[in-house]
Length: 445
Image (cartoon, rainbow, N blue to C red):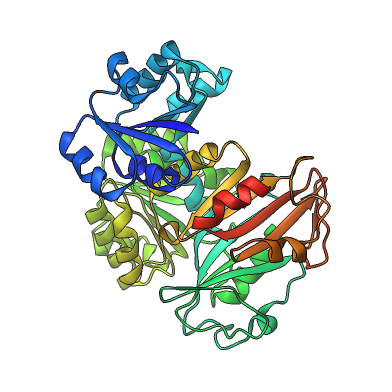
């Protein structure tokens, strides 16, 4: 597939790196120095130029391209790129935006701005935060098969009740698959006898109820219910959408916003949220309002430095669990190392969603784990799938990579995957696989 990516920032570069091995990729950016750096980092074609200009898009190959991804940091630029690309050829156009208004406009027809898909980074990030809030100690959560299957990644701590147990001892749920352990720099596919150690990062796949139950088993704190205190610091777009989504799940969060005009607007738009106009770094205020007793505190300010300050402060004064936004993807590990419970990167979650569309539209959904070491794929098996009519054990033995079938959904009903489970046409399967073998699985599935 021929793919033209406009914008060589973190999102565009991440997408290009993921696609480089299996697709013909051209990446365009107006910054010549950025393009020079990419030449030595990723095996893709590069072009310095303004992606809104038809002459630049023609030179990049947009006329023949199967897909054009507009991923600059400016919403309007991305929408113009889609419109220009549409006049030149017939690519599948994807626009990345921050404004939910542009996303809502596109949703009315599915073709506004000449875009085939518009992804809103702020909505993606807010949705991820809300998913993580629901699962104690989860550092990443993704939904598959329309929400019938969940994938979650957990940090295993010294104090976790399952530390020191074998996988067989920890596996108390029928509809749950222990897909992988990331241990130091190694990927371990767990067997029943594998001992779970502190410091492991565990990936599980299963029904929402089983994943929720496992979360309660892993973490010494209970899964939040509607009576728990959830505090959001920062009333920007992501903070606002996080509160709105929590209200939709019957939570009544608190939101701290320093700007008085913004606070008034938020209070009008969020009827079930207590909006407080104050400086979130004022520890006396935090204690006076009992925010130090929060079950979950979300830091959703506009800069990584401010989010780090508020997150560290919240942990110090006693907040039980802290989730922080991280704009720079390379800071995610740093936030986790200093004790922040979960770091959510809007750039990373946006890149994942866009990558889903680039896998020849075979993958129904995708989650990228551990900086691209592994992926979780959802495939809907068609009549020509090499998986149909074969059991999971046969498939596993026929591929040259470590693969774990985490879940199977058949006509809306979950089928627990076992070695002798025979896959059928129409099944939705959720698979864990190392990233370098994703192409092989997609070709077979």
